[in-house]
Image 1 (cartoon, rainbow, N blue to C red):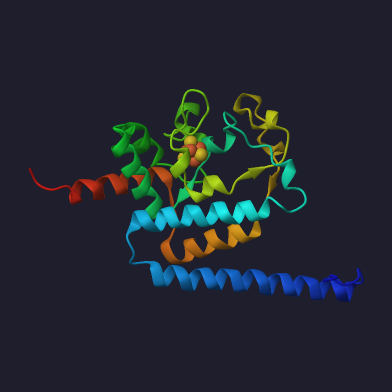
Image 2: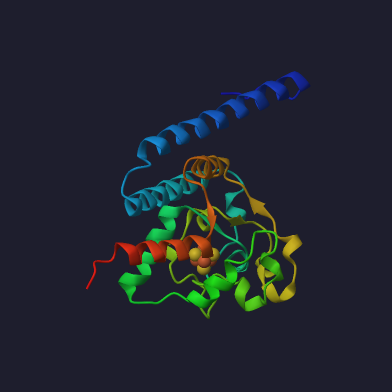
Length: 212
Ligand code: SF4
């Protein structure tokens, strides 16, 4: 279907249709998440990840997606504050337990004293996600949170090299459908910075553990 001409009225009509489309997506997710909120947390997190992957796969067919330059070992995003859902924290803790890999509690506690605004005031080693390995790869890639999945960088990968300090030259592609889904998750479940969410999930897990 033709999207109309380029005069101001056509542009305004197009904009209104886009806004209605995005609002419809957002409201649909909010309704769905509210209905599912009592479901088993790990299953909810896995379903959210599968849905995000499907959305991004669909988006991959759109013009401009070929410019996405994210690749293994390119980890700028993993050195910033990452907000996650409570169910994703539970899934990450469960994954680490199953793999027999302890979490770096001391670093999580230091990180949890920081907000989005103060994150970069930490020493460089503490800015890094606890799941970032020595090769700059994600050690929990298959269960990484949706915030990590939807970050799509389109600028030169060299700008993502932390040592170059070119943070402001990094450009991103937005998948609006993904943004609507995570905004709805924020509304229904709330999002927390990963360190606090992981520490809470660890405590919860200890409380759930059977007494010996
Ligand atoms: S979970 Fe993985 S992808 Fe996400 S910030 Fe941590 S290391 Fe990076």
